[in-house]
Image (tube, rainbow, N blue to C red; front, top):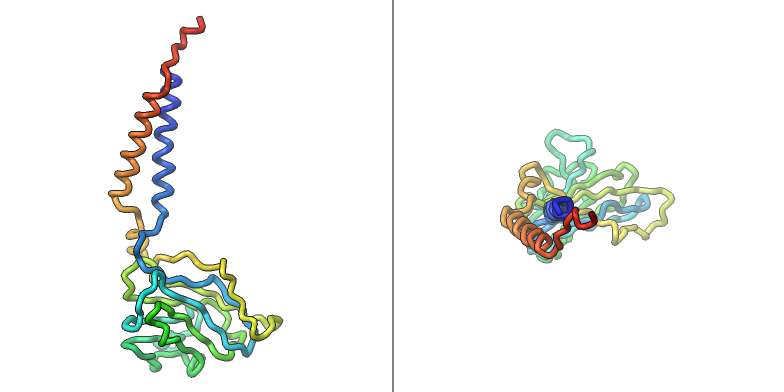
Length: 213
């Protein structure tokens, strides 16, 4: 009898551990997330759009929007591909390589669209671009998109795979910690697990190891 009940107990203890692991990775519901594709392909000379938006839909007209290229060689403190602040573009901090070449669709900011257009892309524009909404009340305030400029790619066919969108990424260590499940969720999982364990123990018939003798 002890051996059979020990097996049920082991099953009961394993179940809450599996459940906790599943709940641990679930994003907090209701928070806005910055979302974009992992990559975009384009031909040299093409005008390209790097799609990026906030979901659920949110009016971003009063927010700061930062587009940067981490591998761009810094020019003093000028590191932005585009900086939008106080309802206008801040051109004084824009990299020379992108002057008169990048823009937001400001009329669409009210619906959460923060996509970036780059005019006349070249091979030098290839690389990773980061879209950050620093004041967004969320742990997922940024998305990273890789632009691939391919000379063999047919013009006017900018490619974005609709199934190739990034999972929202925490912006720093504090944000990663804030993404952990709330204690209330853990307690609920543990209570449910113990109730299930009790039910399993109650329903499992006792087995007498001497019954076969």
